[in-house]
Amino acid sequence: MPTRVFVDANIIVSGLLFEGNESDVLELGALGAVDLVATAYVFAEVEEVLRRAEFGLDEQEALELLQYAHEAIVRLPDPEEGKVRGYERRVRDRKDAPVWAGMVATGAQYLLTGDNDLLSTVPQAIRTKVLLDKILAGEV
Image (cartoon, rainbow, N blue to C red; front, top):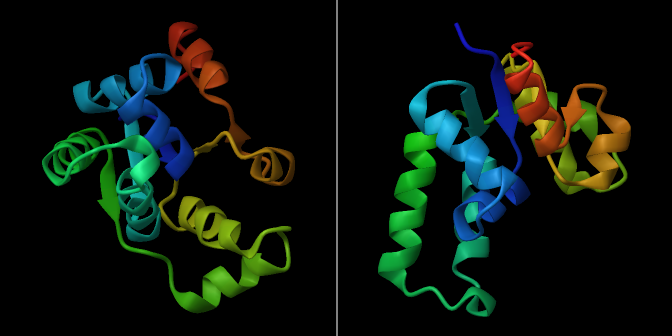
C-alpha cells in the first residue's frame, strides 16, 4: 500500500496551474504511486482559489482542473468539529487547524504543504521536493 500523504490546498492549486514539483506529485497520485488525500475543507479552498479572477479561468477550465484534482487526490470527509478545535490552540492561523486535524484524521503519514507556519509546527509537514526525493529514494 502506498504511503498516504495529506495534500494542502496551496500544493493542489500550484500543481493544477503550473508545471513543476507539485504537478509531478499530482501526476504520481493519479497514477497510484502515492496515496494522496485531502478533506472536503481543502477541496473547497481549492475551488474558491481557482475561481479567483487573478487566474483568468472560465467555469469550464476550473471544472476540468477540479476533476483532475479528484482523479489524483482522494477526497475524504472533514474531521469532527471538536477535533478541529483541539488544533486551533496549536497553530498561529486558525484556518490551518482543519488542515492539521484532517491530516491526523485521514491517517496520513505526511502533510504536504508550502505553508511556512504548518511546516514549522506540524512534525509530519514536508515540502514537495522532500516528498519527491523520498519517492525517488524508495522511502515512500
